[in-house]
Amino acid sequence: MYLLTGASKGIGRHLLERLVQTTDEPVIAFYNSTQPDFEHPNVEWCKVDLSSFEETEKAFAQFGDKLTNIKFINCAGVSFNAVTHKFPELEWEKLIHVNLTSTFYICKLLLPYMRNEGYGRIVFISSIVAQTGVVGASAYAASKSGLWGLMKTLVQENASKGITCNTLNLGYFDIGLIREVPEAYLEDLKKRIPNKALGNPDDIFKTIQLLMDTTYINGSCIDINGGLY
Image 1: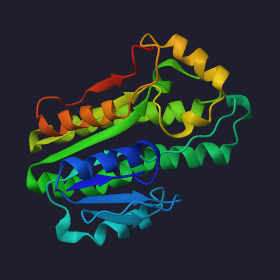
Image 2 (image 1 turned 120 degrees about the vertical axis):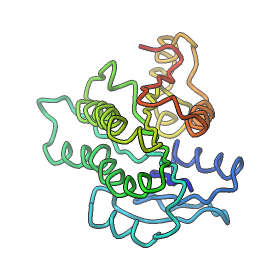
Image 3 (image 1 turned 180 degrees about the vertical axis):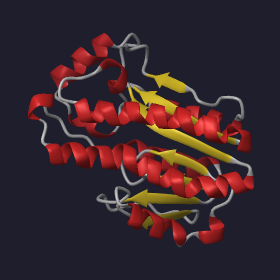
Image 4 (image 1 turned 60 degrees about the vertical axis):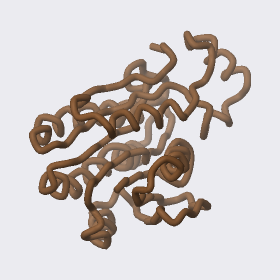
């Protein structure tokens, strides 16, 4: 069974569409603010505010015995830009809760199932921003680098139980909000990428497929960025 957060738009939506094309396994697709417009017999949608532990716990409780052979892909995330000395405290707290704390909540709830079964796959979607820094992205960068520390600890605690956890550090892809970026900025960005192009989101899916099929890639931060550092 796949569990996919942030599944109703952007990269999460792309991964969902590719999953149902390539596997017969059921998918629990989580969303919050963006109403899903995609239906498939193998997909069960679940609306939940993942920044609330109570809501998340209640959502997972309803699936009960369905939670077997778990493959968790964490795509949920929000962004807010402001230079650090002007960053609103409430926006910081909201972003950290959605991007980082909610990931901890889900792992806390899923790991007992995984450990009992002796199997689990966990993939966190992180960002090149945590490596390079971007003006105005202090909270976003902090939340995404926080996923690395969480991932490394989960590996130490759970690898002996047949559970792998890895992080994908994404560059800039031709999907989602990047399409709203002004053309002049976009062209400048492409010049800075050694590949001279935005990424194809299917490369993300193919990397996730590899991680789902292997046991010895564990605790890795995998860069998918066209060579941009």
